[in-house]
Length: 459
Image (tube, rainbow, N blue to C red; front, side, top):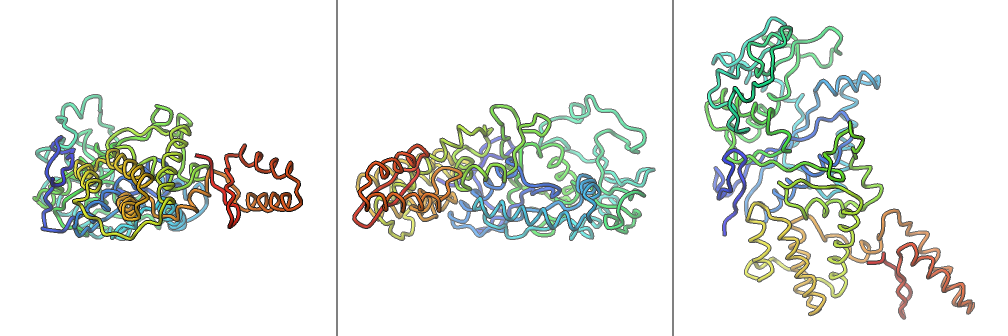
């Protein structure tokens, strides 16, 4: 079966055929770097990391672009609050982003453009739109896209202009001709730092958010490319506006397939700062191993809402430990995946159906059970190789299992094991039993053998 992807634009599963034979060009909206990455960012990064991994596993060359928005109102406000330059803030947040993404096993994209490096391309696109009568300069100096001049606006959201306009009203001071018109170029404000002001034919200012992705996508992937992804919250207005300005400027179809990942909920409520249920990636990694967090994301389908709770992460940890335990039964043999193998074939069928990771993960558990039964090094190798397609099961199994529960202090455990060994040598069996029971109460199981004592977190 060939790969099928759910296209938000057509609202249907479609057989995927890239525009260029054997080569997939994919753009995913990245982060606005004014603060640390949160769980919603983790969901999107992991989801599209799996997408690009599976495309490569399927034999495609992949050019993957994930941008960084490093100029934005929130960035400017935060830098001013902190008493630092915009560049200092964004450099620091980009470093933190890379640390978090690396921890989650997310492979670096082919290109990671910063918006501020592509202002000339944005100005060029705005000029083309103005020349075609699709953009105008308002009295306040802003350059705006004229939505009603672009036929087909609303095709991604599936709403008419009148539906989108319902409840909107024009703010006189923003100079809009229509409430839906959106900014392409923001005129400079006197109180803003000089570092966020660029010279342009429209006067000093800076780009609007939507034009950034259009310009970077077209520059790095071409005026038409295969896949554009991002969170469901970006479908409107951001992605709708990207289509309008890109196709308005080039006259060509912008993107073939639009993909959107689902929201993160926290205990069944949408994660938001206002509700006080907002978690950064680093908040979660203080309590859970990075691969557990990745597995928690991967085992849900990318389009489904993902409900975050400690209970679900605890369950993810236990489930991932079961997979790793199978890799301790026998040393996995290094294998090239034979897609005719029944387990591999089921895995491929699942992933080829809109990246069906829940079904693919179920195959991993079936395979782990067979490894436990058969003690087959070859099947253990298949388990590890299929796990790699999801960015899982590549750590040393013993070390992962010994990492155990969150907050485990391996050095402290080893010290207690040494104290227990000393107690046993002194025939102080009561003390040796006390130490074993103390560790067991902490979720640590000791295993004695002729070669010594090892430990792992309780299953």
